[in-house]
Image (tube, rainbow, N blue to C red):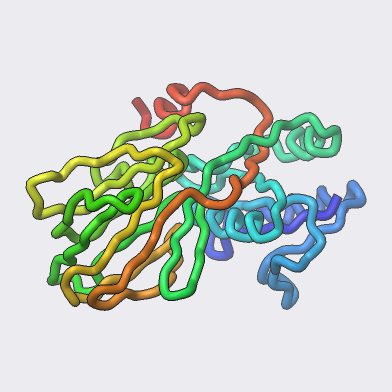
Length: 265
């Protein structure tokens, strides 16, 4: 097996675990490449069978970006805090690698979201965020859904999330939590100054168009990556991504169980 490891390069615990993962994998005869180690930068042209993240959700998002480009599955070892995206327990490293070696795992599709603007395209598993650049000024956006005018926002920003991303920025902005088996997009305003200030759950087949109605500096990010900025009259189109990203899973865990564990309910 050929694996690419995307580690958290800051946390000592994650780096120590990565060293154990690499040693145990190579002992099994696997080919291992570690992003940022020995001059290696993992890229979409590398012949990998799986991408493995060792860190928290931020590290997992970097790994997902690579997995999408490679069209390969991704597995996360949770060495962060909440760890909504990472499924594997780092205390069970040997058992986890045994299961991988024996093919005793499932591939679970996670819906993606895509942003198109200024000739650029970016895809993520969590969210697209359209937000202000200047911390002192609100942005004004006109929103169309499926080519029909829907509403206008005066707000700090708007988050368009997948079910996976509904546990992240969208949730902190007041959006609902969605079970990952649901296929939908959630549009959640951030600190809105509008009469309509609720999150909307939208069909996964819908196309959402945002147009800058007032030139106050707008930026677009996908899974936390700053993609581009928009000026007066410019647009970003958000829709379902072209294909899902495949997450490696070892057992079926109820959505309610995940919420209870992660939020300490």
